[in-house]
Amino acid sequence: KPRLLQWCTLSVLWMTVVILMAIGLAIQTLGITDKKRVMSNQLDQPRVLSMTSRDEGVPWRPCQPKTHVMFLKTHKTASSTILNILYRFGEARNLTFALPNSYQFGYPLLFSTRKIKYYSPIKTQEYHIICNHMRFFRPQVEKVMAKGTFYFSILRNPVTLAESSFTYYKGSSVAFKKVESLEQFLSEPWKYYSARDRGNQYARNLMWFDFGFDHNANDTRDYVDLVLKEIGGTFHLILLSEYFDESMVLLKDALCWELDDVVSFKLNFRSNVTVRKLSGETVGRAKAWNSLDWELYLHFNRTFWQKVEEYGRQRMRNDVLVLQQKRQRLVDLCLLGSRPVEASQIQDKNIKPFQYGRAQIMGYNLNPNLDNSSRAKCLRMIMPELQYKDLLDAKLFPLTSRGKDLHTS
Image (tube, rainbow, N blue to C red; front, side, top):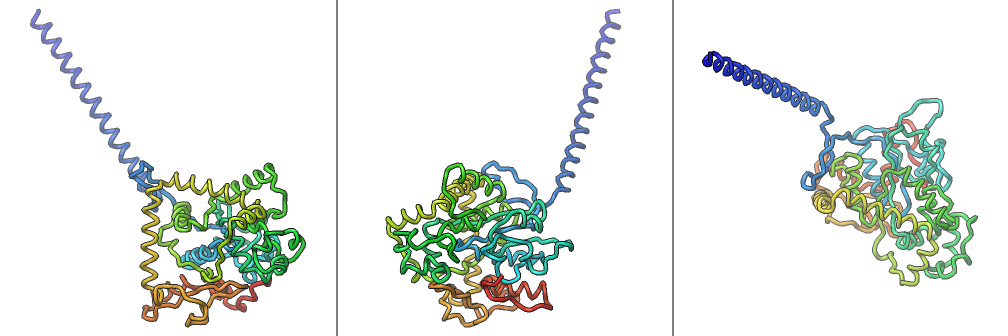
């Protein structure tokens, strides 16, 4: 009997071991199946990945390149260069642009869908990109841009903006016409400025005006905060012209584009000969006179650097370096002499930038030894905005006449 009891005990233990092994094998099999299912699901996801950094522990996430984009083109903020980027991206992918009847959407009036070329409220029309000058008016923009459209814009330090605006719009602003210099104007602005006079949006809080708000309003804390909240709730990204390369990296990431999509040459910029250095006193007066723009700039300067921190500073430095290297390779390939030239030195008059006011707008000459494919790409990178808009007009509306005068609407 003891032997029988011992045998029974061993049999029970053996059966227990067999059962446990079977359970373990089943769990492992189920785990492998689930893992395969997870991997299969991952393979079904979009294969375009955002450029997030593994080194900083930020997980890669799948995303699709955004093709519905609204860019508020503010004045004298490097916005013409961004316009060129959007034109090239959209044209290469046969996207549809909402183009103005001329070159601006009825500026300085608030944006209206009636200013879109051949727009009809009774005919369904999908627009992918809208990016020409306008005074922003959200209800009208939302009538023509799809839900989920990416909204962005760009700002510039109001002090250097004021200096640039004075040079460029000296002949357009009644207030500026009355003085010889920006210093004279800022010494007694109310002596020369009237809110009712033509073109005076260029003389005060120009960015605030472009965003669609009252640029002559009192800068009370409650009012400023209300407007900043409205802008922040509408626009997904606000860039800074002083940090253009960092801005392009953030834009690339937000749109799920590639760095190659945001490589550009600087466009519609002045010769250094026409740039004036302002005294400390004039700088202070410019900030005070453009106090709403200053509040706007300070606020979105903070949000800009918050986004840089989220992106990762080292990662940002790396991507900016790659972007600059890509640009330099294109400079060496595309540009004769690898540098910009004054308008009088541009050999092809068809790509001469529009000259306005006292500014001397620079341009480029193409390398004459380019093959056809490279020439087409390089030509679009240096093409001024008016000529590029005419080109898009000709492609989208081949049976109509070309663009009209810059200041018609």
